[in-house]
Image (cartoon, rainbow, N blue to C red; front, side, top):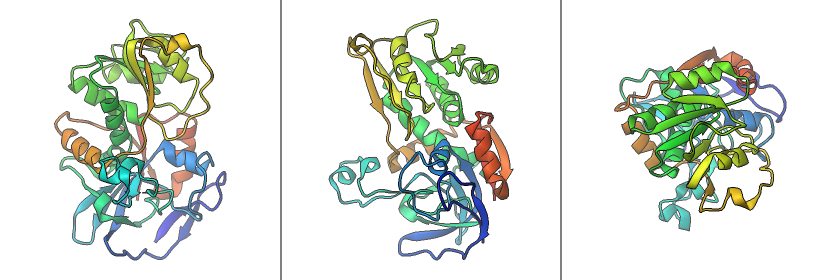
Length: 317
């Protein structure tokens, strides 16, 4: 099978011929038809996440067809032990022994992949393969982040990429008010935020027109955390949605006082997947994608690195 392979962080992926993987007990073999290109893939390839399996086939927003004809989606969380305190308490996203697709386990930048059947979700009807792929990470992490924001009415979205463009649709469906915070000078992102239902969009280094009840930070820029705190009303929450972020600079205690909260989101649970993939068709969530062939995975990653992707990048396998 053809696959794009990472041999060392910081190097381009290489197009190679690999054996078709053999599924083990409890696993399913998938013929991959699409795989989303996620910012987490970029963190792995660029060496910002330590200790990936090498050599590695990246990719964790997999849409594939099983040997029995089922269309399944594979997310970032690829395996958990099922027996630790976190797993048995419904917090399998925090399992210390967890393995992650496209990081500890070979992922979907390939013509075939194997996955734990427990962590493979049926894809909702009505979603073409390419449009379904971003639901499996951008959608799921966005959904979990929105849940962590509680019942906030006024929500600021910092970083208007794949996840924000999905969660904006869910939040609007729930009747919330949205404010888009984009990189200063990024007029295309500002317009995109307005198109997706934000009533205001502007630069992320300044507060918006109203105080926020919650802010979700998708951009991996630590300096946005104090900026988001400055934009919060009393009792508000800043949700850091990324798996990697640059260092958060120090800030005065008064930004946190009055019961403001800063919290992170780690991975996802199978319950998140089941709930979001049931909700998405009801919204209905519509993903905007830029499509690349498998062999152009490096180009897709480069465009994502430069902030040039509108919506989500997806590999057509």
